[in-house]
Image (cartoon, rainbow, N blue to C red):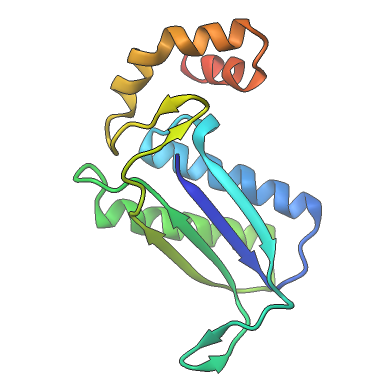
Length: 153
């Protein structure tokens, strides 16, 4: 459901990328009750791209998050996630700055893994409504859905 875009100019190892993806998944899933299976993360090296701030070339590490926004998600929720992201960045990638965390509440509808995504704040009801589908997918050998079943059992 959410899509996190990590753009980095600092050299990251594969282990650091894996740790960042896991941490982002954990943070979002806990803050917004989103099943881990539906938290998407892409990590891209932008060190060779020209990026600008205030009209001047400026290279920085940053995270853009495309999320479902609604009345159940407050400014303090997003602030908490921003702080948590900064904290894990500092732990995983020491001595480099995470310059920007930006949320876009742009996801109004969509489909993932063959399921329509719910509005923000309605994940619990959506999980109940789709539980049988999750179980069938898990029983059919889909390991991602088997993990989802474990997460909520």
